[in-house]
Amino acid sequence: VLPNPSNVLTNSQVLGRTSPTLMDLTAALATGLVGAIAIARKDVGDVLPGVAIAISLVPPLAVVGVCLGSGSPSLAVGAFVLFASNVVAMIITATGVFVAAGYARDAGILKTSRRRAYLVLAALLIVVAIPMVGNSLSSLWARQIGSAAQQWLADTPGAEVTDVTWQGSTATIDVLGPETLPPLEELEASIDALIPWNPDVQIVHTVGTRIA
Image (cartoon, rainbow, N blue to C red; front, side, top):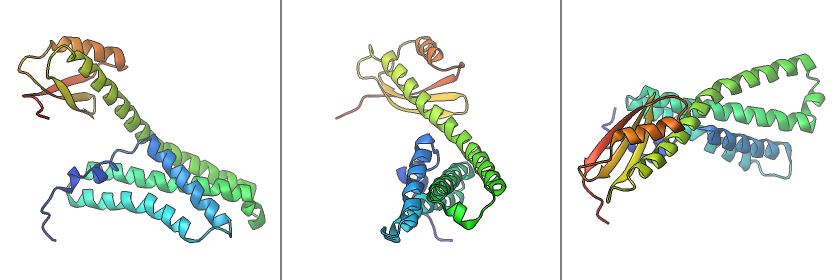
């Protein structure tokens, strides 16, 4: 309803939650472990589980709303994957802690019910992990492509790689440098040696130099 004077999608805190990786899943598992232990122990304050939930669930869910409101459903899907992975990770770690503490035995939960619950959690973990694995590989490949591009420009004074983005099977490399760059075939050959397939490489060349 209110006008948006700035593009919130350029905010690093928003963009950082739209492409979750396996590192985010590891952090969610650690957060869920801390929260579950805090709930299971009476000598730990009740505030800690709430803080753990707040920092893991509220920010990505807020980013989902921000991206939808800004007309970027694809980014909203990425943020929702982070939210869902955090939920699943916290449930898994909490389940492990409570089972180890004997709550399942005290509650009289049948083994068949527990086995069914474990299978559902495992299936959910696989579902949310698949896009996170893809994002992790994309991030790794982007770093490798950036290193290869920097070596490609090593003999060109004043040239540098400013950014590398990955979209589908296309790698876009932003280069700031003089008007003449080395042959693109050299870069493509080095990238083909790094990536399992032959990705499309695009160079966005900005003529100029950085002024310190």
